[in-house]
Image 1 (spheres, rainbow over the protein chains, first blue to last red):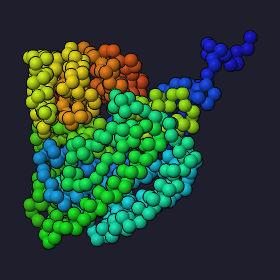
Image 2 (image 1 turned 180 degrees about the vertical axis):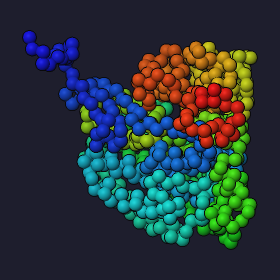
Image 3 (image 1 turned 180 degrees about the horizontal axis):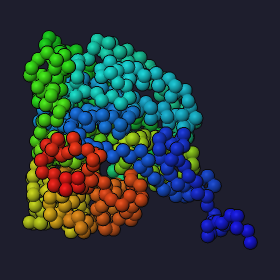
Image 4 (image 1 turned 135 degrees about the vertical axis):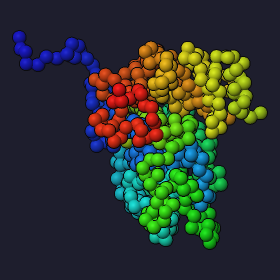
Length: 406
Length: 177
């Protein structure tokens, strides 16, 4: 009897193949493992494993003052970190009862909508790449670069932005920032139109994505879907409309919805959202330009106890130095309370559940990460489909490993 | 007539009477506490009742209150009625020695991973969960890291104790004992 190879019981009789997709696979765009049970190329069942880049942000946050938590939120959905930063600032401002001047709200909307565009353009062009069309990705990517240059002008960073402060921005937008924004508003629509022409009525792309990875509205709600993935299934839920924050109620925009909840509808919804975001940015920029005189210089709330003062004043003025010291050394106690503050992240409702016990750090902070919740549906979405459909479904869900694992 | 927090509260009191306590409305969100035996009944009632229709589970997680003898762990539910656009939050408290709470997975698919995460970090045992195993941490882990007795900093450091963070009486942190 040979004892070279010992096969597990039943493996000779087994009719299916077990395939390990991930954790590190170029087509999964992130650290996701799926153990697939396959019959030929058909997926019979899938088991997802997550947690490969878990960094214990919720625990770390319990020992950090509020302003030190902003860099943690960068690393959730790193394709649109400004939205996470702003969402965190808004949660803090709610508990600290800081009210913002309108100009700050509008500047924030410009940044948040730029972030939404940069996130959606990545997701949509990657769906293109995964279905075999690389050129859309190549051409749209230039404009993500331009968006990153705008971030750079505003905060100095590109990917993990740490943009803004509690109470506003650290400095006013420069002329260069506005010039780059104008350039973006001028050039991006043409490029996006071209991208749409390339994809949205393309026979190959349509046949590739229609009916693939579909979910009904009812199942999507039960699975806790939010954001474009829920709207593609036909539910018009958007936090910007349902729970307006940062003065979204002052703007005129529509919420695009799909009907079938498949990859094609998700693609179309994201594309339509990019047009809405462009219109929002235009409106916000117009409103920003309407401020004249001293009002046009406002970029933060008048809240010295929580807003980090400018560095040059810290060195030259007594009061600013005291506040700087108190904030940085963590001498500022927070009010006791509990708040749940949601924002519309690029892939769904990003919620911050903050519990304060009166200390200088959160007693408990929980991030409601949209893709952690909707990734559960992935096995159901790909069951009885082809392996290549699973890849395209995964990219069209816009899963970001950093957000999933927090 | 539009649904308001008061109407929701009224409907819940009519159904459950004094069982629900600790009513509040911080930041315009209706909050209350339910006994842990009733968590599913409350969820089901909020889901089924035609006037309430809280059919979206926004979030589910836990908070550890080590000083709360006999009810150290709070499981927190955030629900959303998408039609009338009303949110609410309720908590159920459970003791840390017997952290059993009924699972909401039969009602909400989304509760599956959220409960696994809560188990992973706090050790709440969800009774009736189909697959209650760790999700973000490694399987071999033998503790529940978000409980307050596990300090995040290096335990030999003295410059970063709780006093630095505005909490003078941190008696439940191990390195203070």
